[in-house]
Length: 500
Image (cartoon, rainbow, N blue to C red; front, side, top):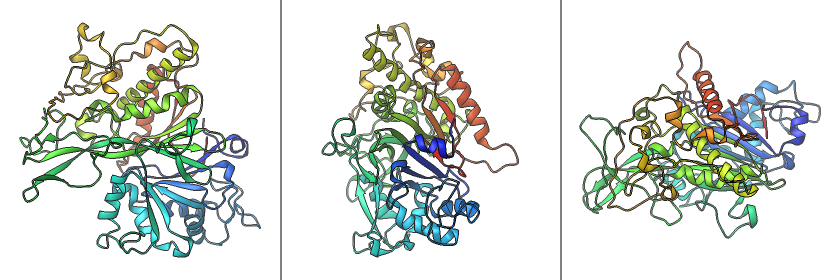
């Protein structure tokens, strides 16, 4: 279980404060997370913010709860998530500004949707140019969207240090998959996030967006900048035709086709989000913080698989301690209404892929005979990975011997065609598909034992009934138990610090 207080804090490598655990519709609790290495003792530039839908508002809310009762004569917080932090001012508002200016060293942005960047825009004017610009780090496509569509002197003043801006922010463009010029060994590819923390960013998919044909240039222009580009270090997008027969934006029940490059029809591209690996410089321990993400099974590529491939060795060695990942809806939501998000059946299926890889590594390290495992799903040349809710309807005995190697890298050939089948409702075993969790049911320890999975970005329904998190958590726990994962699912309390 997550613990707070002195004993756990002494043992922990990370402290995480979830300022915003939801994905809306309330604007005051949307995504915002603070992370620090406990070895830094709240020194200047020792905290990194991952996303900033909620930033100052969340810090003020927490400080108002604990000031002045938990602030001693020296101005040091004696309890609460900011325990040990020296606050020089009297009021929560003034101290929150101090935290933003002095303690938060950088802001990492997973993707530029409003619920992940609105606080950054509204809060930035209180920064002081004399302290130097605050780094905002993200993948190039994410920063392009922020630069062109937010800090552009139209939607909001240009507060960056580019194009004649005010110089309060500076953009740090990250290399997707990590910069191989930095670090060595296990830390190869990681760059500095703040004092005590390093980071590496991998691209993931957050659904699909439109591209439109421009008659003058003869090309398809992206509605937004956050799509997978053609750079060799960024996963390629898959363009598909838009079916207008039912008037909907896009239905996964349709059978889209790849368009030739000279097509004038509207096309779809993959929206780029991010998964940040955060590494404690002192201990080498790590956590992962995901932005909004969809399952590979209904995506245009296998982006999550790359994250699990990178994460599995760290879990096998006990270095990866926690994952913060969204689960926006409960299992009653059909795939066609997830809109680039997760629900429990898909999250457990994704974690099953991670567990499968962890067990492979353990088998290899111990020299044990490899457990017999089935392929991840029916795979044919030129076809996409299908949803775990539909693969049972198309599998056959002929598929059993096929490997899943072709899923490691996304396919980008424009001549390919694929289908996204109708997705019927099925039970958990169909949701998990292959690999079969029964193959490691008796493993000691279970593949993900000791790993904490914190659920963020839950969509609130603002009704008189129970909060959606209760059902989501129960479904995750039930599915996780049946899948023999061994991990612990938790909903973070925004009023407490998390020690990891």
